[in-house]
Length: 109
Image 1 (cartoon, rainbow, N blue to C red):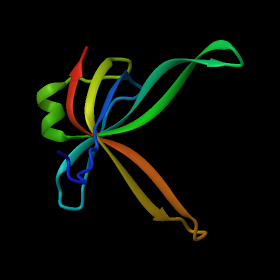
Image 2: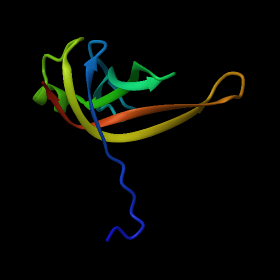
Image 3: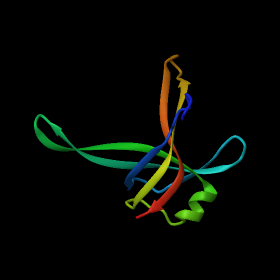
């Protein structure tokens, strides 16, 4: 039984939109950051339409180097991970939110 435990798990299949960029956290650990596009066919006004969603993917530097060292724009990949939402306040005092996928597993297809 789950006992009020939550599950934060996401599975994505999509195309890399941009070559991964290496960034560093405040503790010095490196991670790669890149956008991923997923497509789904939906009905809009009773017509079949393709809907594209863009996801921001973060993956540890060592993990990407091990699983997909040559990851480039346009590749089809499978991602497993969890959703993380961050908030910040802009210069006008408006609270802004961003949602990222922290990748735990990645496979190039």
